[in-house]
Length: 611
Ligand code: G6P
Image 1 (cartoon, helix red, strand yellow):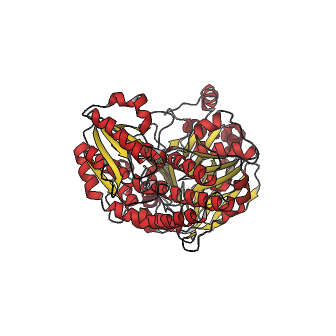
Image 2: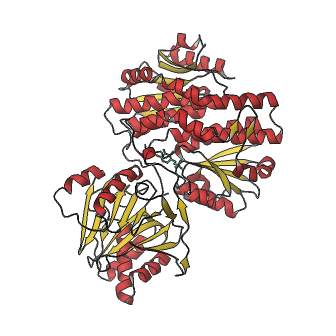
Image 3: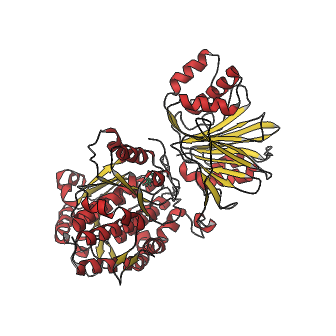
């Protein structure tokens, strides 16, 4: 949450920072701001999106070879100009941006108030900044020393960039819990929350670790730990192309990412699954195969859409591997003192690899002896670095706030892991194993066929865009898809939607059904198909509007449905990768029809790095 960018070198900092902020806007867009040093310290900030900041900057003095910029998802203090970052210290010399939360800020603020400090915002960030200044002034210390001291006192998470008018050759950065990447150029450095603002300029980056401070100058990068010991920066080469973070002719990132799915799923399978030979090569999983096979249980930990992927995987793992699986919301798991036994296998599922709750949950489980495997999209992310091993989803950067291609890639990876373990454990017969490998390999082409339904789904969106509520129902493997469909609609079109197991609706939600309620059935052919058809009948009998997602050849469901979307046949285990696609499109087109910013839905942020 919150995106931060910094630049120091011989170019003008402003254009680099503003472009970087636009790339990071998915992390939050409540307000944006920028600080530049060019003799003077100049700070500009504005409530709203980066484009609104840009507007007020026309004609302003934007000179400077050093600068920091911020796009905010509000935690402390409402979204407003005054709460926007960067903040300025009481002396007007220091300026700082921050991604994270300082939990003990009230106590520190009270101390500072007693020392005569005043505050012009409601943020924890301004408190930390003045705390640093207070230490610097009172102890006659350098900014770096004061920062180090302050960081030892504070409780919480942070990634901060700090500049000092009196030392325009330096940006000081520090992180704990919130990500920071530093790009290394020729006599210049770029700092950002992720690599997307950096790849245009350099592919050599350093991922800063927790509890490290970076002293960044044009020609120098010094890393230290909080004990003031120098650390060797580990330079990584970025494996990402600029085109991957641009819209490539699509109106929105969300649509681009939905349409990328045949390719992203293929990229995820490529080099791993050989359907003809029946081999699945996943070195990280192979390394821990014995432990997974012998595990008494597997716990999937995730949030949001990734949690839904975990829920589908629960069904797949239990069916194929005969290992009990629990799927946990990271936020609940981490606080409820869960029972973790040595040898429990935890699979952390996360697109960003930065979700704070998931990160802390796995840290806790790791301390208690669990094996942590990550199913992650962002290479080098915090969760990746905390996991024992895992498998990347290779879906490429996902920028639309509502997750789409990451979900299907997670399903592809989780299915491969389940198949690999099931075969090694002997819980799947060879015929079924080979069939499922083949089915999985065919998914990219089948997704391309589903995407051909784009215009049909668009027409459905037009027809149902004014509904106040939606119900999404599914059974078995499609239950989690129903939840995901409802989540997509809520996120993008702000229509209230509930996902439910189809049979369970008789225990409550069926009371909502009348002639105005659209009910989306995720009803592709599976072992429970007859059951869900009965559920359709129950909705029809109460005059609900039935929209069903079905498999070709199904002649019964259309007779009970007001509208149908027909998908190619697929085994029930891989079908969620197909059945979710029309639901993603439906949410997208309803959001568009209602005139909303689908890539940046209100109140949301893509990377939730605060708990
Ligand atoms: C946010 C995003 C969701 C995402 C969830 C988990 O809420 O808006 O799209 O599913 O975080 O994120 P992760 O990066 O851990 O998958």
